[in-house]
Length: 612
Image (cartoon, rainbow, N blue to C red; front, side, top):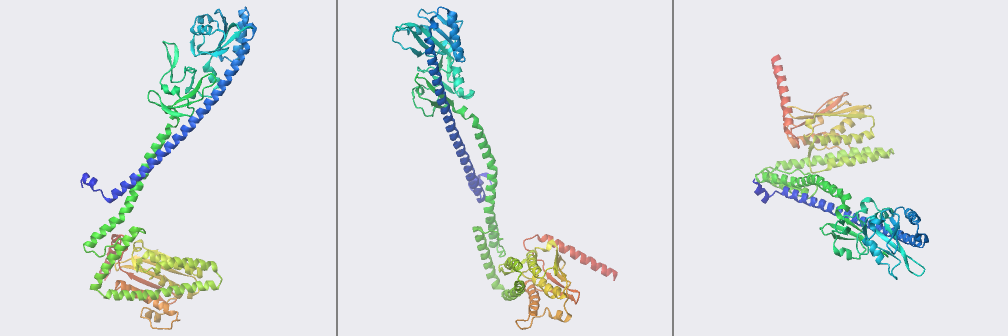
């Protein structure tokens, strides 16, 4: 079959395999994708919520710091020592205050109206004439604010900083000078902001004019020509939005980012965090790899289960198709083994019934004698079952009368397991193994009533276990050995069941070391029974042995049946000869056994003739 033909018309098994495999694979993919999305969503929610909390805490601590700084500098501006002509005294006073703030203030200095400066830095001469100094002096007009913040700038002595300015006023409101504090913004955020080093890079602090106060953010770049830090990579509309809830957008390069911001504080500053989606998910990126690995590993059991399901569904259909082909060729013995309890079981059962009906109709046309023998066999089976139930119920009644309730319960349980093996009418011939199983159940029932009175030994060849025997044929013989051989001896005895393959067939022997059978009774045992009274117990023994002998003859014909030998006071041996009839086993094994036995017999005969 060409590959194209296989693709155009795939077999049913392949269709079922693909359907099952693709369905389960899609389910695994959907579950994995859904779980991954849920984890990512929850992680994003927790991460943005955590960042919002950090921003709020940073904003609160920053406001508190700035209020404290404002109050301290206002109090310092009223100290008359700042106006002292002794610059060393002024410098010492300013240095003490700067140290109080633990170096959060880079430089603290006083600018006089004439531009003279005194402060903590020894390089104040470098900022004379600087743009921010000019702006401070230009701001010295009556009515201007007493305190204010500058925009961030690059200072020759304080690097990138922002200054807080307090005007020193005289009694009449005249301007005596300006107290200037250059702040270390990065140090303040490190000291008062609850941020790790990694998350601090995501923090973005903007001034009132949207100038960056933080410089370690990836969206802040230094312009060497303007000598200042500017925002780069963020869209313009982002700076104009006032939404405080976390939201997702993209930077100018198209990278997804999450933005969380606080409302503007009293100084007009904005505290926000800009998190790149790639960096935010870096810590849980292994989940995606793990989910992919689980999905790939899940394909293997998925394929195995799909293959098993496909074969389970198509195996009975293939078996049924093969038997249909045999039936169409005229083989009316073609049936399918009934191993299913589902819809296939109904289909197989219906097919088997149909084949059986056809075969029955064909057999009815050519033979009527088999139907007569079949009817006789049913009559004999009906006679055997009351015989077994009578003895078993008699044992249960005996134990019940003696108050042994536990033994009664165990016997009823065993009887419940035993009866289906013999009352099932679907099969009249069963494997020897099944018949021996029934014997073991029966012996257990009898051992409860007669403890320590007998033992059962089973030694059978494994090749004989699949051989077919009439149902309920060995147990009555074991029962007779017990009741009429062992128990009358009034001392413990043994019953031995053996089987072997011979040239004539399969021989099954039931031997006991009981009281034996008188010779007169032995000759009458296999004859057709008379009509004694219904209460005559010996009738069951006679009927049971005779029924088994007749059943073997009806099933298999001559010379198959029973042969009984007995020595009174020594024991009895009942030998059952069966044909080579197999049931679901390898016939070659039994055929080899038969050849070996024939070879041995022929060799023995040749030796006998040679000796003669």
